[in-house]
Amino acid sequence: MSHGPLHTWILAAAVCAVVAGPAVAADSASDARVRGELDTVREQIVRAKADQDKLERELAAMRAESAVLSGKLVDLAARLQNREALIDESERRLARLTGEEDAMRLALIVQRKALGELLAGLQLLQQNPPPPIVTRPDDTVSAIRGAMLFGSVVPALKRQASRLARDLTRLDEVRARISHEQNELKHNFASLQDAKTDMQAVLKRKQGLIAQTDKELGSVHTRTKKLADKAKSLNQLVAALKREKARAAARDAQRAELEKKRLQEEKQRLAAIRNKPAMAFSSAKGRISYPATGTRIREFGEPDGFGGHTKGVSIATRKAAQVTAPADGKVEFAGHFRSYGELLILDVGEGYHVLMAGLGEISVQAGQFIRAGEPVGQMGAEPARATLIGDRLETAKPILYIEFRRNGGSIDPTPWWAGNRKEARK
Image (cartoon, rainbow, N blue to C red; front, top):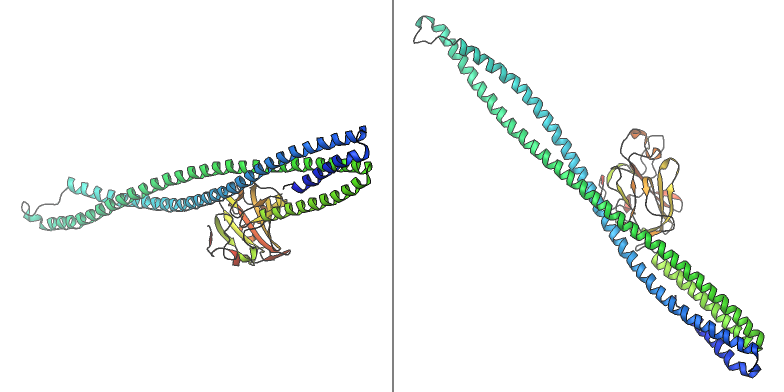
């Protein structure tokens, strides 16, 4: 963003005026005033050049820091989504173990009833034992019956006791695993909250840098315009004093216009480089990660439950799940849209667009360029009405709807996804 040539032609005009001045009217008050104005403008140009050089260095540092923050945001978003996946797994294991515990407790209740009946029978036998053969030979039949009864009851009681001991041991193991899973789930929730806190801090810092950069660029533009206006007025004054000075001013004005055009083109070129996707979207097939952790519940082209066919992919997510950008692109729209909840549209180049609907909150703004993996928002606590499908009108999970479009028409996103798992996870 250097203005070296602009300084050169203004300084040349100043020198020309100083040299030519004595040939016209060395002692005239008008000529002295012109030289004084030229000196003043020259000093202003030197100061402006120093200020602009300093500003360029500061802006370069801010752009570098913004790039570093983008990388941190990508890493934090990945950590957050991985932690969400671990929480999903822990909740499923905990539900399975809880069901197993309930089934075992029911079985133990049944066994306890059977053991109670056996113990009651034994107590009766103890109170009224069968007659022994030795002391009462006249009651041999009763003694034999008593011995047979003991022979059948005692093994059954032993089997019941062994089974009860095994079941109690298994129940203790299940309860220990449940306690472990609950502690693990608590740890994962705490880590998830820490990751969200870190992300909010980094995201706030990047948004502050973006606002500061916009403010500084606006200041540079204003100062440059004022300086150009001064130079123009001064050249007009010098041209009025002498015709040759007028011709020099015309040449200088032409050079200034060319320099201005060059600077504008350079600014556009740098902006294009800064906001250019790292990879062409058409070349990213098989490399794009899902923007949120969850389960794919509807694919492209399937019946939508209302008599039509889906034009995108639907993912059921956790409440407040993190959503990231699937590819590099410029935010074309970010805001609430009818019954779709928060809607985000990314221009990813080559005529491709990515639409994401059903978000509960969006953390980027229109006109902002973001990199793949950067956080763009999070899901809400319940699904937006427009994201529901015919057979899932009562679902409780938030639903992220993703649609790929090219030149205004929906296309099948399947070739772009990295892998083809049912679980939409990185």
